[in-house]
Length: 301
Image (cartoon, rainbow, N blue to C red; front, side, top):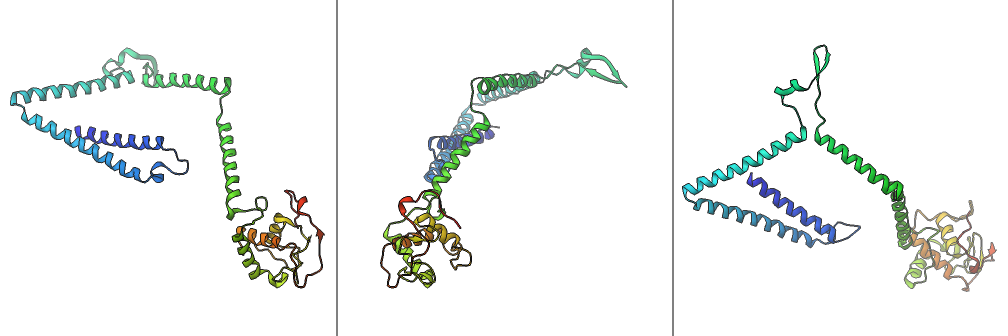
């Protein structure tokens, strides 16, 4: 039995250390031990220390016990036995109180007059453990009623809606800053030299057959003037490259070949060609587009 108590103490101490670590170190994405691996070392030290203490206490107990004289040892054994019996007796009494069960030999005192084919009914009291649970549920019901229906506490449905709204805001913020998750609504004009150089490389690899290397236009329209068939500005150009141009006009959708980040880069490069002078520019096509009038909405096919 002493070994069981020792194991329980060690397990309890380790569990307490884990709980304290999780409470003390807040990290919404990972648990404390994933975020700070050195905590495993501390937990190992706590475990080894607890085991060492239990072994030391057990060894000291054994040495002291063996050092007792036979008479003293006998008295000690009797004292320990009486303590053990007292504990067992306390548990027996507590168990009986929780059941409040009439002994079999005294059941004649609570037999009712009902008789069903020889089956007779006992008028037992409700078990106290059940009554205590029932009273506790009544108290809980009143607390719940006053908190949520009288004082206007946040209900489970409201908590759920708040958490959903928070999650949606976090997702929107993540999508806004994650280049790989760019959409027509979140794309912005890129001006960094690295992005424009990458966009130029993509343009030269995929677009010059229709628009020429200088953007002057060939099969496709001139990309250097202010006229656009499907609208100018980063959002419209991003949408055109992503979804393709007008049906049957040659401009295909590139969303299966290019990542959103790459489409944003090549779109920004295309817009950087605006105002340049190509060698053999094609006549303007589409409508005049002024960047100043670009709003959140885009022109779609």
